[in-house]
View 1 (tube, one colour):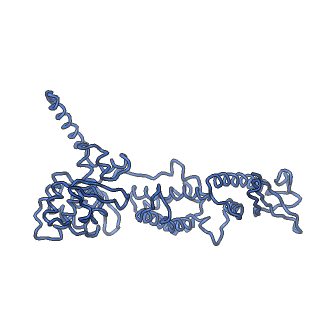
View 2: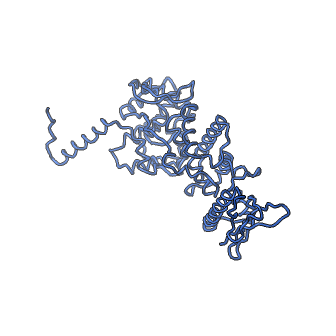
Length: 430
């Protein structure tokens, strides 16, 4: 590959500097750099502006030509050797990208949010790890875009690619925390999506700031204070007499199925008879596309028997979240626990101590399922049912307290001693 700079004499004393790139007989491109130089100040041999006192911009021009050379060669290496199409206007586009010149017909090649809009519009055509991008993921992209657009409106500045720096990160996080009143984990999700956008922009060969790779440009996270229901509490719900309230009776049966299958609400709400084969529930998860197989336990079997083999009818997730709080209150789940509750006025979660029933949402189903089985059956078996890809991801669902984990270990030791005919350990007396 060869790259040369040259100028053409014209009547005007200032000439444009052109760039020519050719690769054997395969490609031969020529494009104007947009830089001007006095014809008498140009050194054709070195392809630079001469070191003359009168050439006040010589350092700027020579520096730009050197950086442009590096950018063009690196772009060609990446794009040609990854099989990307190199069209006749390739060099012109690269020069425009390098100088960050806005093409009125292609603002997405300069502006961050314009690129995101195009990315979201084409998201349903993309693949992630060989699978189509889900509606929930696209919704996450759109929410992040709206946050960035709101941030731009507040700052009065439309972000270019080179503006997505560490300073942008600090300002954006501060805006999300203090203006939008978002929680740490929600802000972390927004930052994670912004970093995903930046990575894709770089793959597109566009000049995104490299600050997104900086260790300080991080998606923050904190341990969620989510609750779960113990097996005793689930039994209490199961035994509630709700024959006089069909609405809560139906909701309780949906909750029992969710608590005993570990399915997401989007999956157990669409269960029907076709998903039941013998004593097993088989359903393809809407989010992951993986098929879960869950044996029917006594509580689910009794629920089906009560309904003459039929499943409770589905309701919206919003109503489900509302109704199960009523169930928790009726069941007497009044213990005060640490958690976060949605504030209906601010539409944001507020941390504090609340009665346990107030914190019940659809997510309690998977958490309770995973937590109650953890330590009793092999973790990979639970993960196969819940559909978690990694143990790290799975462990975020485990909500046992330190005391509860200690009790599990204590019972294990007692059982081991019993199985081996050993004398149980004596209590230490101080």
